[in-house]
Length: 283
Image 1 (cartoon, rainbow, N blue to C red):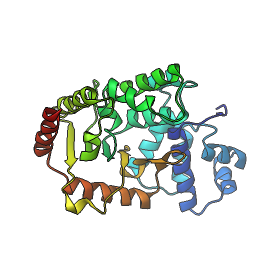
Image 2: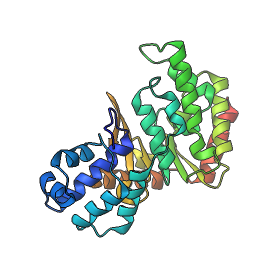
Image 3: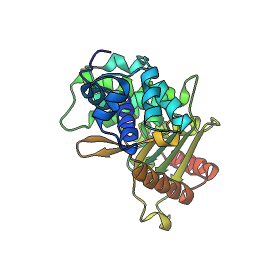
């Protein structure tokens, strides 16, 4: 297989998991290479994501690493053999790579959880709301990139509104619902859109009202994308230098716990719908 100049986040995750399996087995890259009859450079390239690995070779490596988790091996084999060039490839070279990595992550997710405090989660946004958000970026975006970003955000909605939607839960703070992004009319349209989407059986929207006292110590905004097996879950968090992907088991456990806490203290789905409906009527 040829080398890659810019591996995707999914390719890098596969590479990372293979390195973790090797290290858990107590083998060096040189020792793993000897088991396959290749040189250590090839193992290093596979573990850096700069070159692919065949399903047959992946299963051989897993056997040499004494990995007995069949579900994990099968999931990694699917990742290794995946040659999908999704709709997001249209944006390569036009938008930052992080946008494409998020789209790819969502495409393969088995479920999706969002927690947000200041903005409506991207998958729930209307075009008008998204355009208003992107247009206020500093420094200001060129017109063409602004339109690419809006278009990309709207296409991402296929995750919950397309022909093969995934189970989706969003926990949104009242502040995000009240902030008038794009003005009163745009905000009302956004609230109506959330209500429409929440009618689907696979979509759950829950609200954290200002008056909720138990919420004070839970402030972890996040996106959680489910993997084929729990070990392959990914948390996406916004950082000062862009999105940060969390994939270590210890950190994943922390964010799963935080999400469950936020979910537990938020309003139930029906009360949340009533709450959003009441906000919309105020506008």
